[in-house]
Length: 115
Image (tube, rainbow, N blue to C red; front, side, top):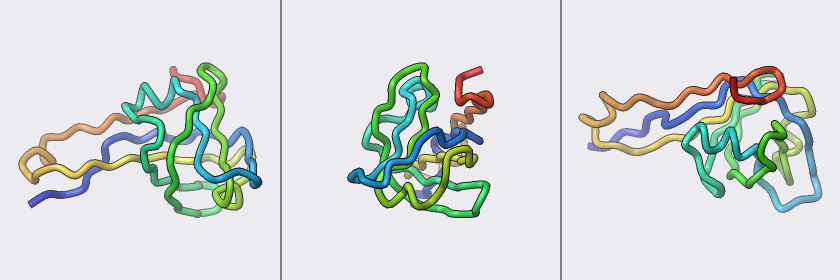
């Protein structure tokens, strides 16, 4: 039996931009993506702590060191600049491996930079 468990979480990053006229996704500073063990085009679950929205999209590369977190396309309707997000990825593992698996948890600073 396999179970889905948290692979990585980036906790309380702030939206820095929104772009409604885009094909969709979340633009993320690649420093955060790499540190969380995530990759471009990977599906993410996003929780907006300011309005309670939960939605899925995929990662696109943002410029390193900028702290960019941008909601694009329809996702731009799920938050506004300054809102705090939790961004998560999950992995399916056999139950025995899932019990021992340790997810990556990142807690960036108030400017979305690694501490």
